Length: 422
Ligand code: AMP
Ligand code: GLY
Image (cartoon, rainbow, N blue to C red):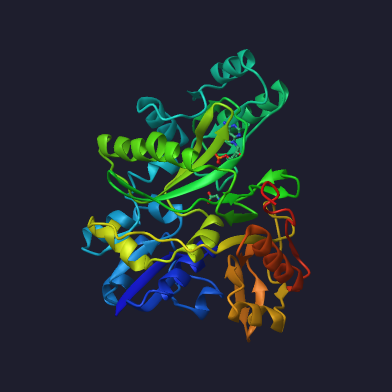
């Protein structure tokens, strides 16, 4: 039986642990650092997800067969490179390949060089030059800070005054840290998340999902890490997926090989179906969160085999998906994505465990703690409650009923997850 170490502590990692626990080959799962929900399915070890040396020492001492990396911060810290140097098997991209997410400018230059459809753009380090460029263009305009900013590095000003303020923050005031700004054309259309398992030139698609990035109903309010998701996405056709595979994901994987930083792991295409075709909004170098929580429960194949094929560069088994569909609602701390309190008690009524037992819902913990058998809020995003069904309406209804039954005085959620398709 295999021993696996999952690195990370959110809902995404809970869904990865959950998928691994369905593998008949996996006997023991550790999660570093994990969370209170993950602790029910894996042994949590108190090592930070960026403590590369600590993680490596743990994996060596415990003879881990495979490590799986969740968050981008671990990848950007070079955990994959360090594990490989130590002869350890690990699923995820190298630090160099992770630049596709860590630097918006790198990603845009790559897309320009390899003809991958994306919004027109220009990169600036100089405030005056950026302002001149923005003055000549139209509004709204998209300003992206070039660096990891936890989903807060994108501003879409409607006016020149607002754009000026943002450029000052990003280029003069060092509010985000010293850097560059990508000024991008504003695109319109529904967004969708296309995650693929990638091993160098080989690209294996996952089923599609759609996130809801804004904090409040009606897609209003600030951008967040994501407030809910569902899978599959019926408004995206098979032709769109084919186009995204052939014109976006495969050429991007090939471009990374040509640039000398082949990608291994999950390449996440944040795509938009615009009136002039599918275009790239962003790339991530890892599983999406909360997308993973609606995609992996639909996986019928053994995820250990998939991770192994990528980690070992061996042939990929056939990847099968269940017919059953999923929709999930994020319950977040009031104030998120801004400041919020922690430590509010969460009460799961008995109906939750009976629904989980019937496999009609699944609860992934994003940010919780446990003390004396009681659960407490411990993060901005706290729970991802996923419903299953024969169709998205059924999955929606089951998840929402569960969300409404969970008692906590400091959580909020969007009731309109899936509005584009219901
Ligand atoms: P990103 O972090 O790059 O995914 O951007 C966050 C969000 O900003 C995206 O999910 C989109 O909703 C929006 N966005 C980013 N780039 C564009 C663009 N070029 N046109 C329209 N909206 C965009
Ligand atoms: N939900 C978007 C992301 O994982 O980046």
